[in-house]
Image (cartoon, rainbow, N blue to C red):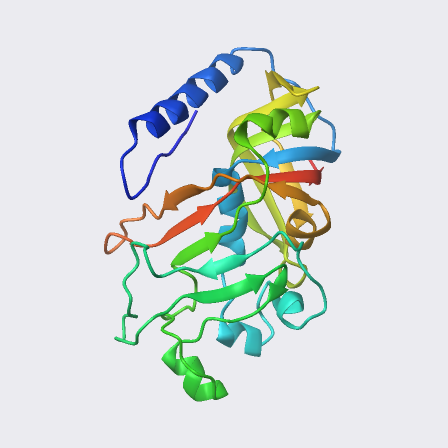
Length: 262
């Protein structure tokens, strides 16, 4: 089991709820594993699992340089060839975050709407891209990735997740993600830690490690049924060279079909 808790203000109640949820899930891990065959399954991606998916998309996804050179995994979205679900809204929410209000070069940063109702809006532009492509710089650092990403929630209440899922997978964490087709925003990765098989709204067994291979245009598009109303703040915990200040605040996602390959 792995669980995170972060926030701007400490809450005994929120921490206790998070700890209790982890303890309840831990009890199910002692049951025999449920084996799954390759195919498509209903799934719920907890915030930590969805964070791994979003993290892949931020590798050049919103970068002005990557978009100009046609190497962005969100190229089709920004070119207007396809859309995400209207439920999907991404903001670079610098205000109120742990991220500084200026770039490493000293340029001021402001809040930006990256995706609105499933449609691409702004892109992240550093000083180099601004000069090369004649675009207004908006304070992005080298690499032009978001550092204070905020994803809007939906209408799904936490106590209704299992009931709405019905029969399918409850996925707490993912890892070893990579692109299987970058141009199509197609991702592959493995489940990690607590992944459970749910039947008729009840957890019945843990699931052995499985691989998925699916497109973000499905997971955040046609297959996205709802997002949780409550969101989780996840801080970047990397300490390479320095303590990171990046963060993401995001909901969990109810998916009507997730493609498993192994």
